[in-house]
Each structure stands twice: as structure tokens, then as C-alpha cells.
Length: 196
Image 1 (cartoon, rainbow, N blue to C red):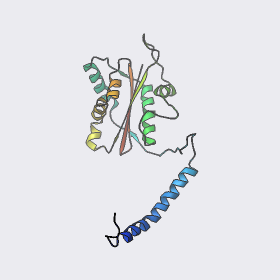
Image 2 (spheres, helix red, strand yellow):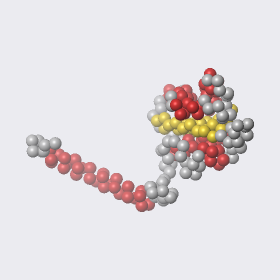
Image 3 (tube, rainbow, N blue to C red):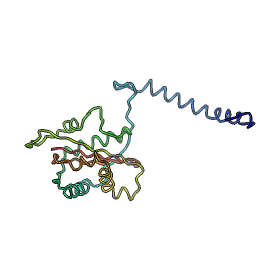
Image 4 (spheres, rainbow, N blue to C red):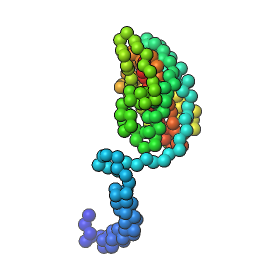
């Protein structure tokens, strides 16, 4: 920008910077407070939980029916719901929503199998496997009322659109699934836990 050809530009920039100075000072103070006063959990960055009121949404039974229809159409066997896998799925969905994150990480239960163990899941032995766990997680934001009404279809279509998530939907090993969808009025987190 050539300031000499535009008289008054420098003054305008100074005015804008001065006008935002109190706000930036507040932001700096807040950042310093968070860095110094929020307890650490062993990492280099502060870790704090955002209190988020959420509720269970959707119809897990309908999602199971849609999932099983899809699996049967691809030559796979139907899955059964598992109460313990539901609890493990709810743990991850609530963690993701409460921490405004997305994925499979949870410091208390680092792996999906740890979450299943934490809720007391007992694996059924099969001829091929002693234990098996796989997990799908998805986050959707700003859902409309109509999208919430057809949440199960939205969730299943989103998983089908991702090659790795679709592979989990159609995996031949699981016999059980846990389903959880939690919503806070703006963001929805869904987790599926596949196991035996």
C-alpha cells in the first residue's frame, strides 16, 4: 500500500488500531490467565473441560435397522445392539462434544477397546478372534430441524461416503454394535462401536 498517494490512510489505520487496543488487551489477559491458572494434565498445553449440556438424540434402533439393511445388501450379517457397547459409544460421543473435539482420542480411555473394558464389556469368543473393536465417529454442526428428524439417514450416508468409515460398517468380524448420538443444540456427535 502506498501511503503517500492516499492522504489520511495512515491516520485511519492508526484510529482502527487504537480503537481495538482495549479489546486486544482483554484477549491477551485472558490468554495469560488460561496459560497460568488452568490446571495441566501432563501435556504442554492447558487442558480444561467445557461444560456442555447435551442430550441423546435420534433413534438408535432405527440407525441399527438402516445399518443392518445396508450390511445385508452387501452380503454381511446383521449386528446386534450391545448395552455395554452403547455405553462405550456414549463415552466417546460425550467426550468429543464436551471438549469440542472430534475423533477417537480420549485421555482416560485411549483406545475403543479401553472404553469397552471401562464399561465392563465382555467379549464373546469366536473361532477367529478373542477380541475385536472398531469405532466410527462423526461430527455435524448447525443441523436443521429437518436434518435432526432424519438424523439416522444423515449419519449413515456420511459414514458411507468415507472409505475407511464405510469399511468399518461392512467389516465381517463384528457381531455387536453400540450406538450413541449426543446433541447440544448446535453440534451433534455420533459414535458407533463395533465389537464381538
